Amino acid sequence: MSEFKAGEFEDGCGDYYVLYDAAMMVRDVPGITCEIGLRAGGGTKQILDALQTKIAPRTHIAIDPYGEIPYYWKENIIPDQTDYTNNMRDRIMISMSQYCIENPNINFYLYPMEDTEFFKRFADGVPVYFDKGKQIINEYSLVHFDGPHSLEATLTETLFFEPRAPKGAIFVYDDVVDYYDHNVIKSHLLNLGWSVVASTYYKASYIKG
Image 1: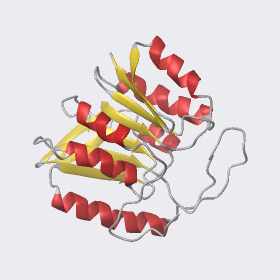
Image 2 (image 1 turned 30 degrees about the horizontal axis):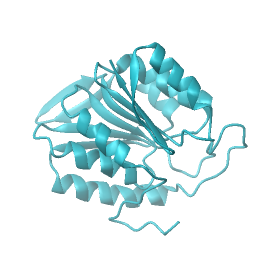
Image 3 (image 1 turned 180 degrees about the vertical axis):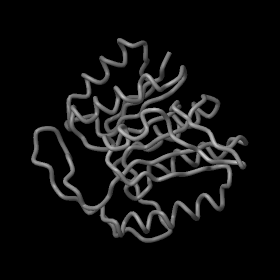
């Protein structure tokens, strides 16, 4: 893996076009877009590139604690430390700030915390400040699940966001092969009326009907 440089975005695994396509599809769906796991911003940039082509402003949030805390790379392994340092957080924020300055229709917030901490504190919605106003938004048009890669964590995330997703919302899951039993998530969504949008080696996406 190449060294991350300030002012740049770095991709993680592959099939990031799935994120771009999903963001294009939700540009007229109400709600904010969200990514669990910002890291070096490769996935986020795909989402923002699609959203910024829309005239109406959009808010995107990212949830990532950084801090080199133990991380579940896969199901049934001992959590390991990562290179997701606070220094990486600081450098990617330079990149994100530059992006938002160049694309003022994007309103970006980083929540440097674990997903479970976010759920505790923002169950009633996220305060968004834009154009001299404030809104409490509790709808999510797009969620990219790229945080802890365990079934328990991914299911917990899904259960939080699903009732907050309007019709037409899209969920995108990362590392769906050999990391955890993604079929559990897939079955849950299909039973609730969601449909498959894309299924690749790295990612799976679903739309709410």
